[in-house]
Image 1 (cartoon, helix red, strand yellow):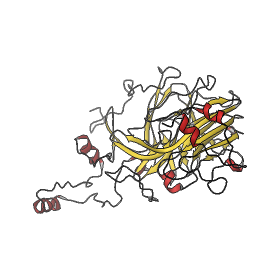
Image 2 (tube, helix red, strand yellow):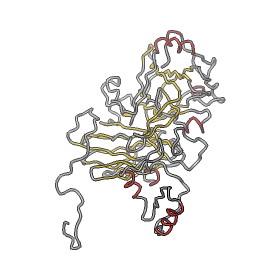
Image 3 (cartoon, helix red, strand yellow):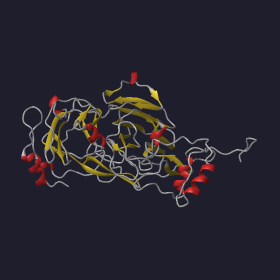
Image 4 (tube, helix red, strand yellow):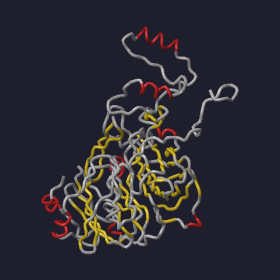
Length: 437
């Protein structure tokens, strides 16, 4: 953790129009940056937001601020971090304040903000405020609108938030590496008028992709397309927390895409409306109904629905490989191929080698082997993982559950466990005559 003395000594600010110079008093007032070293979902900052519901960062939290006169001051520290992707697998990433993604920044339309950015990376960086309307010199493009923030330096970004909406932050310096290592976060600007599009629960996450080779810890940032780890807020199922909702709540989910491909995000049990993008709110007359929202690269979408049906509802990317854990891309297609003869010959030739034929009947057997204790390489998750009340869920990656319950208290986000289905509402097995077996 950066001490106040080290922080004050390390401040280096550009002169001129690019960035503002912080006074010693402002620096001292900033104090210690808050850190988010674990992947717990924090309670929203409702108290600091004047009693409004606040924003719930999936497997993360929002960054508190300090007032300096009429300015809200935040402090981000760009640094190497360790992020548990899911129990059993940890990645060595880069992020902010101990986490990848970094903590969410929350403020209000019309606020004056000053965001200090301290660089503890081994190379220079910047921050671009994706979708925020601001002066060119605050836009965070290294070499174009500001000098690079060198290791050990701190810069300040200062501007007025002109509109409400859903935005992101990420580097515009060595982007292939820095974004590929997990440097990103959400920026939520709430409407000044609390009566403007109110919701009861407000969730969100940023999507990232990594190539973490089996048995390794550091993402391979030279990969362009063939990633093996698809994550929401740098977590993969079963490490992604559920979205807990009270029956009858109006729910908003904000989704950002900083991966290298689009993602059709699908919610079971509901239809919803597209109510916003990183360009702004969609007028009610222009909103459209969906059950899958396709999120383009570098974009954000807000979806909204009323939670009027109890249950555990799957919520996932509809690209099937994005709901699977690490796997190779050079796997032979063995579906329908009889391997028994080859297995006997290989076993005779290599008597001390454990050979296990797979894929003849499909890949569901991978889940069965994981359930029976077959260990993957060190620090590598099974391709399909996660247990539900009826057995293996056979999902990984970009998957979680929206849990709607009538007995959830307002403001409570505690996981209620699995849904207890009313009698007669679960699919059942029948015999050849169509009778319950």
